[in-house]
Image (cartoon, rainbow, N blue to C red; front, side, top):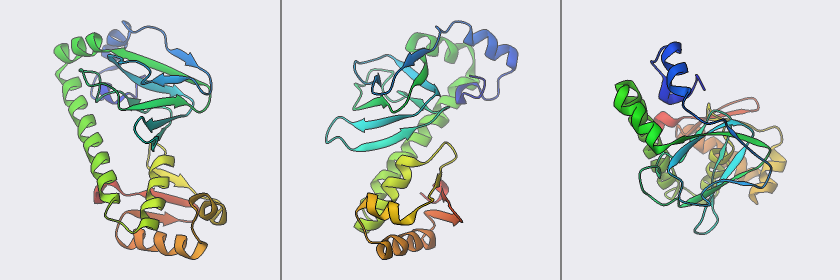
Amino acid sequence: MENLFLFEGLSKQQITQIASCLQEPFVFEKGDVIYGANEESAIGVLLEGKAECVARSGGVLMKVFHPGEVFGAATIFGNAPVSRITALTSCRVQYIPQQILMDWIEKYPTISLNYIRFLSEKVRFLNRKIALLTMDSVQARVMEYLLSQADTSDTVEIRNMSQLAKTLGVGRTSLYRSLDELTENGWITRKEHLIQIRERQI
């Protein structure tokens, strides 16, 4: 939990003190809903495992979560969840209830600033989703896939382009052309099997 974005700028002693009030992490099995089944007043931190976020309306895959990522920040203060997060593997999740978060924010101004920065990143993520609507359909499909598969450093490893083309339902020529155009337009960079999403361009 020391690497949680909320704790950036705090001492190890402060982190130990404020984290001591949390309950033990919850364990989920593959297929379990870990967020969105009810209107939870908490944010969650995925400590172990992998989970997917699917929009309730239309069933669109929004994101794949990896260890260290946070969910629920947009709904903790009263908004009903618009998506559901399901475990893709065995998962361990640490929940931070609303009241505890409010107590932290009141006592430690640094946590307030960290929370605002985090929400700003979420706004950027939504802007990125909107930007996809202006793309060529194949490019948009490629970017949607990359965004859903990216790890915490916004990197995706692609070992088999033929398999990716099949997964996306596009031809290999169209896939390579789209990747070249996305690179030229600054959306991604490519190095061997790794594709890096360049968030600062969005």
